Length: 258
Image (tube, rainbow, N blue to C red; front, side, top):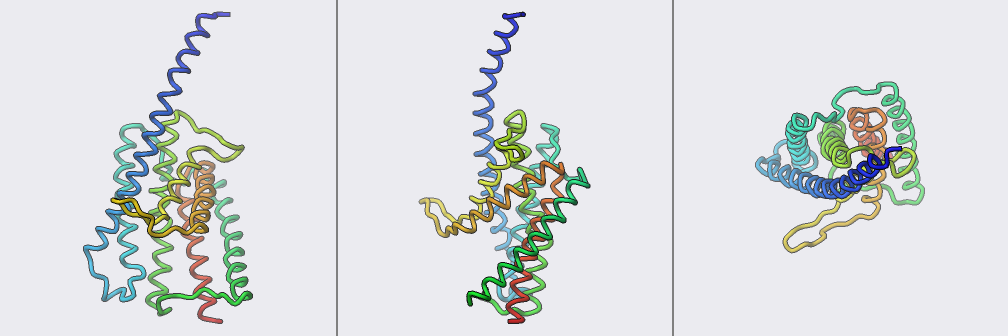
């Protein structure tokens, strides 16, 4: 047995570990800055326009510009990174059999959850109410936003970008359980943090919804799992959009019928 070779290998492993920790930490900070900045720039771009004529209740138009802007920022960053590290961000159909299986299972399960949730709220006499009139324009506009932009924008910025970069910084995918990886957990934490409304300077939390954070984190874990299993961001994008449409759409149906 070549003890000298083993000794050299151990030294290399020890030297590599702190480098990965530092690189991973810097990557995590960079991702937070990118996501925070993309969100802020999205709102800045949206505020350049007036939507009074097409969206008098301020429900969907400004939000659409915001999500479209942050998606374009994320895509531009990914395009640059791809040329540098030759990473696969999953902009293809990947493992179609696996992706479609998870998509169909998720859609069926979430349809039951959405229906059950609204039935339960009716039973306890706490139906969902809306601060805006349920006009045809508002319903089509908001559901259209959820269908076309919510999933595509957020999954690119909060799933494809962070998961891929974190795997690169780790040097490999790191499993924290049989099916869940550390990069997916960290990306989900960033996604949950994006649902906290806060400002600087000075630092101040403007809005914090514990259930919303838990929901975002859980959906992040689920979508990240499917992203890695299917090797495609397409299926998480569809899952994200479908879940939003089902929850919002079911709420509208109940509000209009009951």
